Image (tube, rainbow, N blue to C red; front, side, top):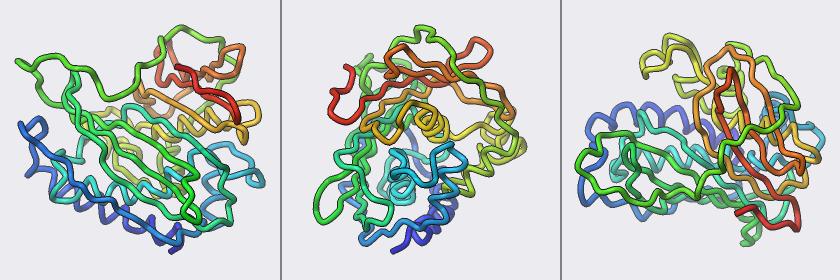
Length: 289
């Protein structure tokens, strides 16, 4: 199966999600996640889409496979699972709140992968219910890459007891020194959507974004993570990233990329607002706790 064939199912999942979401109620007591593990075997990375993705995110087209790219390959499977009838949360309105990616071995762009996706748990959140989704990439049976993502379904929590959140603790939003400034065009969401296959309406046009409560189209959270990684020193050596999405980036925008002296903690900011915080580890180093 080619990566482009896998991504074609994403549009169908978005349509299915729009149809099934009105029949689901977030926060329903006793909600249970499906036990399904969705698997795509013999996934081949198409050079054209990979080159387009690398260009829009700022990675070298001749470098190693970007750390974030297997997430793009596995996202159609995640959407298929989250828009299924047995998934308890409505996919419309889900907010990507955090992601952790661990690369155990750098996959080669010509390597054939097996992708699997499953839901790992529901947890109370101060603003609703958060689900953790897991994506794994294997080659010859060996786990080479994995990610864990949090998605928040917002609903009233009045009367509910506070509980620990599913995500790892976020890094404190201490202001880091800015090292670069980027001007993001209004069509960035459409351009990234064409490269990644993620054409969620909130990223495409002001009109479609307003249908979901945003005044303008917003940048993809996964683009902001990838762009920050691409800007870092020796991005091919980064084997771990954790990022927390704090505020959407309304397009067009001018944002600042900031990083600490060690090059392991980073932020994306604009107008005094922090949009993204994250931390990285390189090959052989331990992730920050």
